[in-house]
Image (cartoon, rainbow, N blue to C red; front, side):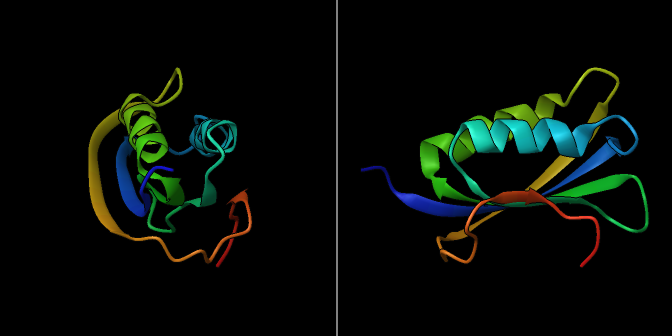
Amino acid sequence: MSELASLHALIYGRVQGVFFRDFVSRHARALGLSGYVRNLPQGGAVEVKAEGERPKLDSLLEKLHQGPPGARVDRVDVEWAEYSGSFADFRIRYWD
């Protein structure tokens, strides 16, 4: 079994109003990851918290750098942490 880890990413650019959350959610679920994606209230950024096997998180991170058609990713800030097991599945959060 691969090492379990936690990824926290902030994605900046034209990432709101371009189906970025749906894009992330579809890829995270297909990879079997848990966590969430949400727009940050100040606009211009999306937050992703994902947990699972490290190679699958690396695959998701590649997708975060690309984004869906219509998006423009200027920067991705990433922090890695230990797996917490806090999430049952992967969801789009619309509020805190």
